[in-house]
Image (cartoon, rainbow, N blue to C red):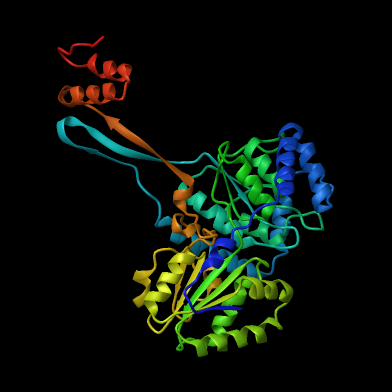
Length: 427
């Protein structure tokens, strides 16, 4: 890992992953072909990229039921409990419509409406992510979205992973399609014979999925353009070096471009964590990926006190932040930019990934400076409510008309003046 002890965080300028022009052209071509070719294009791309000759695009109820039956009982119980925790957390986020009567009989307010339809992308192929099903779909269901669709690429056996289907069944998602990649994003955005388009697409994916979401944005809403996973851990000498090393590696094993960062006030502790990482790396099944992440992206930032630590964190704006100090609540008020914040020595990042309740779809690449984790707000829209009385219009009409004329919009001014008693229509 690279040591930084001079406060220079220029490495942050390099963390954004730039897609090659070839990849962008490939995604644009895939999207165009799905728009014109529909289901046949989806099947052709699934054969090309996944090696699967699909007979049907939609997963049947019997396939969902059979897949759930193959999942170990202990895992099913974990999925069920995690779903309950996630739902309980997100139910606290539900906003309410409101109106109020102000002066002169004016009624103002806001109407909260859930989106009509949402597509949840769940990565697959060689992996199985039931947690992504729960995190992507539950907030939408809590928000009141009527149609929640799930897409995920098939595995080598030609089926979506059992755990993904089991999680979908647990929370009541039944419209599931076994397609992935940029072609699945295109289908959700524009529709095919089998898949009706949606209003918003959420969920993590590889570079091609991210580029596809970027391409269709504007025709459909998206959650974010997710980059490689990140974790920053602020720790002092009171922390357990072995635990901190394990937490850093929990994100390093995601991707070669994942960024594990330790921010510490103790050089001796930093060296101890570094030694633990080298030791634990050898025991990880994904050692090659984690090693590349640690060696190329890993940082140990040495700071003099918690104020300097907080300043470094706010510059990094990490996806995940652990505060593993003697008093994490002391530094918490200083943190402005972080996606999810884990307090104390027992709050390991995977607790949030799977089980605690808050969402694990979190802003990356420094976007925690302005963005929030996926939540109920991601699946609703607000409409303003405005009701003016005759009294209010008479009292304020001249000001409104003057404002409109100043901007050169005569039609706006006249629309108000025609309702005003004794008003002189100019022009």
